[in-house]
Length: 260
Length: 258
Image (tube, rainbow over all chains, first blue to last red; front, side, top):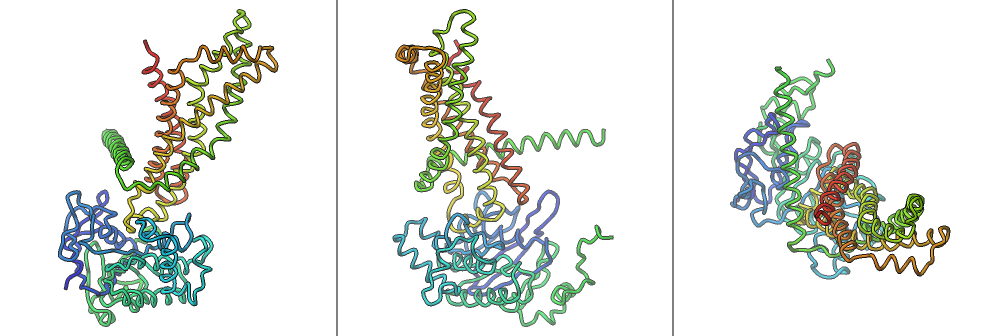
């Protein structure tokens, strides 16, 4: 069943067409990874889905329902609960780790504080930050933990509400290879455990292979290629080939004019 | 000419779009101040941050202003033997003008800047986007509590500042200008009208609104990392200070013009 269906989505800033007719379909419980060079509009695509950016035209259907309402901005998510892991973790730095994880429950006044705390520990345990009932990390502030741990806390916060759709914005950017591997593995495990449909944007090929079922490549505001992860090495597409191999020469020209 | 007209047009459109953005922001902020859900805990926290922690600086400003008022008006009024008017001068100046304006300026510097920096940092680190994805409206959670707290706490602070300012004038007058203490207080009280105080408090509420609004607005639309946040704090303090002086003139005209 189609969970998310994006049709002919367009968005331009000033006179630059960032999204120039993007069409994508994500099946229920599928993990789609969108790859593409920096500045190609991956983040804009995600922000359109989240309702943070208003697309110029096109359609976003979730669970078969159009989410772009009267104002053209995605308001509800077709009845789905949505979780999001931001590139910089985006933890609330005025709150302790556990308050971040249980933020939504605390704001909605569901249950009492103690219950929210227990829930936070449970979710932190899922990302390996409260194993064996260790409550130390839960009571630290975000500024007191490392970048990799912040990402894990942000993951715990994103899945706290047991969403059926999860978005990941460059989950491994700025992390060392080991932390990246841990995050990739956790993302895979957590999304499987809660049975969520996921959309990840990244340019880290190790993430793509670990997290994705399918891959779509965004280039020049359009989906250049779309296929299973297993077929990415012999896609037959020059753009994908260049990106996957990380070649400087090829059809994708980075803006290097300033260097000449 | 080829560059002149496009420049004029661009300036015109930029101005219009800024005005439109500000108008939309004000409307949204006001709307979210009066519609549920209300985050009362956030309002209480902001009330403490904006009101309570500003009291020392506002109190110090008030007491020295009251003292200077008494000294300066003594020098001037002694030249035509009108020293007796000093209690009235002090209390009227404090309640009508200097109480609200100076408290407003101090709070603009202290609170307006910190609001802009806090919200601006939340903006550039995607914390505001994170709020949206966690189904919390940032206008309701971040902006409305600050505006509500500002509008309520500024008049209370100004009432306290008025009292402290009058006390400053009283202290200087009785200690070094040979005024009779009880006569000073009687004169202060007798010539004071309710309108003198209430007009100052209404001004204070307006200033509280403008300060918090400008802090939130510049923070919310800040971009570009540390530099953007720095720019936002500067813009917040400058614009709220100018708006305080401007609205003070308009309000004074409304209250006291014949």
